[in-house]
Image 1: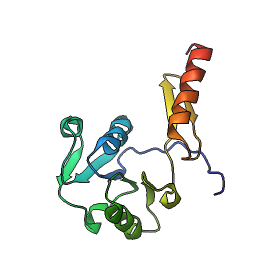
Image 2: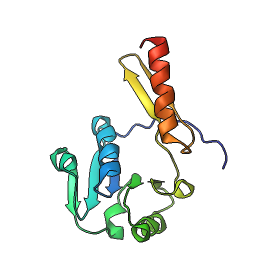
Image 3: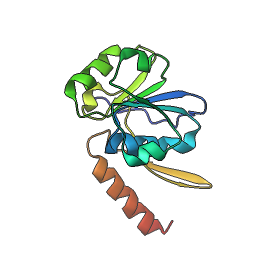
Image 4: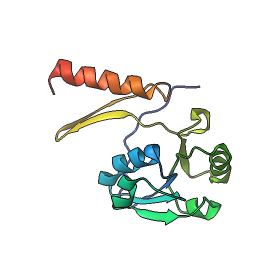
Length: 145
């Protein structure tokens, strides 16, 4: 895989759809809440935390119509057939992150630390998310930020 091109996306009023209602979907939704995005979560069931979030929830099995208006799509289910179908249903102008198969992803999340005047982001190109978090924690401790 080629190296990615890091960007910071402006998501205000953009449609973001998360397929799945478990722990990973919850983590993605939590990270998106402060972006101003229109967040929709589609799943047969949701974690307790997702049920409390200010997101639009569709409690049903995935259908291709659920992603028609999405700019970003996060595929976070534990069902390989659903994950595969979501990646087949995307349009060329949509970006997808398949949390179960990085080879089918257009982008990866970075570990971030945000303060008023700066943002630090670390990435391993989707190879080792736990490592990115550890590197960021070490940076925060050594820089005392």
